[in-house]
Length: 127
Length: 319
Image (cartoon, rainbow over all chains, first blue to last red; front, top):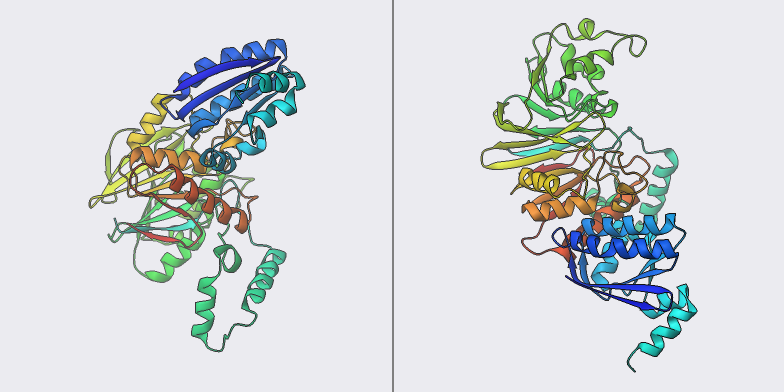
């Protein structure tokens, strides 16, 4: 599984790609939780860009739950954006759509959490 | 092993369909019947068979009790929830006058899984035997205690007169019992619970209720995948949604439909049956959960299809 990280103004965007299953969830946890720690400490938003994720299992969803809980405790926000259709269905069936903030696109997520991040993203995005 | 029949499928607490819920069902059925020709009994049966289960049926409300049809003369059951009472009545009617032996395998000793025993009429009858199997050392103590004053009017020995026996099953060690190979597995639940794997005649049945799955522990997952391996049927505690099971209801000792599908897929099981339904769920909620679980199986399938059912009181599944 590939995981890329970018920062747009005050917002950290983490983009895993591929399947997040019982084999790869530990990899996601190892990569994500230090970034969550950093975002929580600075009280800045963290957005998970899921456009490249084609499957997530319960073990992967547990990692998101831990990350969201840490961010919430710090008074910072974690959200997930751009779910593929299968992953969106898994979120619905598991009720994770009720406990995590989900945005349709990364741009929607940035628009919701930070004007500065949205502007930085638009400036950086290839036209 | 020929199949199973569910006598109790509700978790934690028995529930009953209320008068207003029944009236809602009748209204929905009558609306669906508008314009239909229902002149004969056959027309009515056909029409009812077309209705969604939640509209013309009910999942029922007895707590855990599952009958295994081994094809042998003895009765075999898992757990003694309130569903044991109607099972006992059916057994009495079926073999009136003949001595009967009942083998009962206990997942654990919480109230909803033992409350049927004081009302199990066959155990009142001289000549019958009830053999209770389990991996808890406190098995006999728990069943005797629920009939002590001030909780119950008639004591254990007074009512059963030695007809109830107890057999300890060492966890992880295969035992021969009731004509089957029986293995138990320690599960995560307050006070411990045990899953059962029954094997006979080339068939394998897993009964795993009141079992929480700590997702962070790969060795736990592997143990359960091996326990479920190639099972023909897995009867699985799916009381909560995954989000609830790992957040607000973490450590409550139950699991979800999502984890049930994943474990069965990893284990190459053939049929998953969801049970131990949340008492606050009405029939429509359980119907919706079943549809979602089937959809989850479909969109995450990587090998052979896994059949998915939701247990209701009276459901029979052939093996």
